Amino acid sequence: MPGVKNFTDLLMWQRARQWSKRIFEATCREPFHGDRRLVEQINDSSESVMSTIAEGFGRGTQAEFVTFLGYSLGSLNETQSHLCAAFDRRYIRE
Image (cartoon, rainbow, N blue to C red):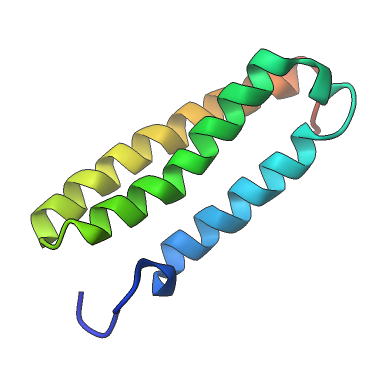
């Protein structure tokens, strides 16, 4: 990508990182923290969003980067589904 030398320069990666951090912080609070299975799933999938962006960027071609952005979008949707479960269980507010 022109002008971008490192994946950490990508605004989408920076936002994914902030989002993953906020999710992690929410899962550290009770009673959410006690639901270990959901906590692990939601933290893994939210971290996967930023990790997959980074991996795709490192692949070196635009086509592979776009493919990995698709994978990242899948992890984003997975996380969104886990957030719905957390809301239904009253661990988080809308």
